[in-house]
Image (cartoon, rainbow, N blue to C red; front, side, top):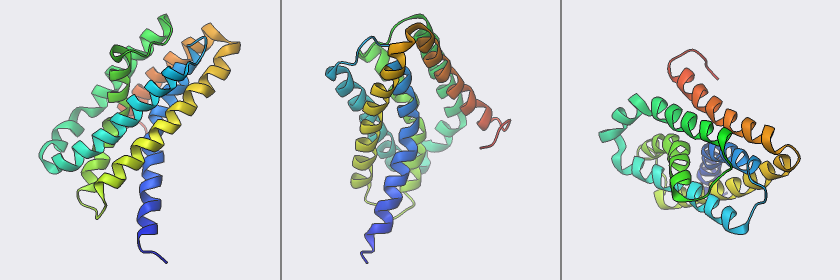
Length: 184
């Protein structure tokens, strides 16, 4: 048996784990659009996949230097970004320009920074790892956009409100977990 297979499986499982926030946000975005255009799918996959690949790389190189500062406030950053974006989603349809995608991509990738820090203490190929994370997140995000659209086609306005509420609740969950009020 190849000794690298367990490490590859571990990287794949980590990739799926960190992709879940982007997947949920993509479903929320899909709920709010009238149709999913291929260009929107590509933008969504590139924004989320790109940032999910970038943040572990940054975490890997920053390792112990900056992680204690980021982890001290990451829950507040995630909560603020997702609450703001979720509130906007409730009021308007989804946009795929950089002003709307950048905060979402950053909010969904902050936990990937911590993954990158942990990679610094593991024997992993960082380049392989971030590529797998980026590709998996991009694929999950594209699928989430379509899944959200299927449900949103039938219930456009309630789905738009639900999508925004999901983002706010994800942000609140992150905040409450960090503050010790809930444990999953």
